[in-house]
Length: 342
Image 1: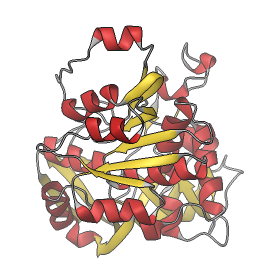
Image 2: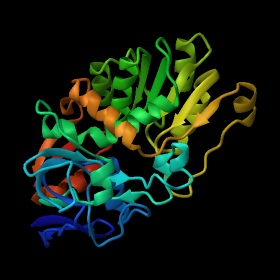
Image 3: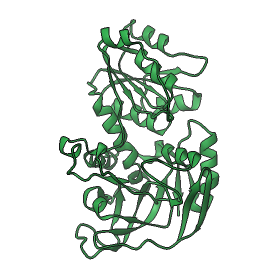
Image 4: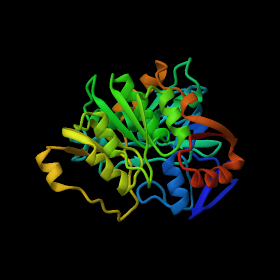
């Protein structure tokens, strides 16, 4: 089969490799669509991911496809079935899993290889985090389930209430998902983005107010003016930069909640006003990854038509063009997702 193999920093080759062999609990899926992700772009730029991928390796992790082979012990899936498989599954037995924190599992099994004609889904993910795609749901929509699950978990961790004012900083695909979900939860949304096109997308998804935030424009004062000096109930940081982490902490009201969703580069440091956090009783949270519960919730939202690829995917390219796609995404901030079709 043809697959995209990452050899190191910005070193990607689309080349023939062996079709994966499966064991008794595995399934083999023909990839119908794989979506690009900001994490994949980071992996491409850095040449590795400490927890998810060590080169040389086939990479990519947002996918939907058809079952073309099943192991002898597999009973939940059959040949020809349309499925979406998450990129991880917890052990369910460790300290964190027993406390409902499966995303922090001590033996979290990751799976990569979506940028290929076929991908092996290992037994644990088959059992705990793979799902049939409803007949009315397209492959592109189904492939959104993994990032959407992360966003749902991030928003629910902040416990939004209908009528809350939520600021979303960063309007890439993840930030736009936060905008859409916050509106579904009945919140007023202030969208903070760097570019006009990003802000227009957020507005199309229901954002109530739009603010330009960049190196020359600090949105904190504007947000406080719009909220009678109090600040927002919830601030979601979906960029992953120390500057925007600090903005988020400074724009919430007393008793408000910040979610540092965007992961900053390694060794980053953030300066937070300890008096502000203490005397205003600000809750600071950070959300990483997803759990099977949230994968199921994401699939339900997609199945109900609340989240569709039309808002988050704007290009389609063959697998052979993946290197060009990665280079483009690396140099164009605020991009949407590209659908890679093997």
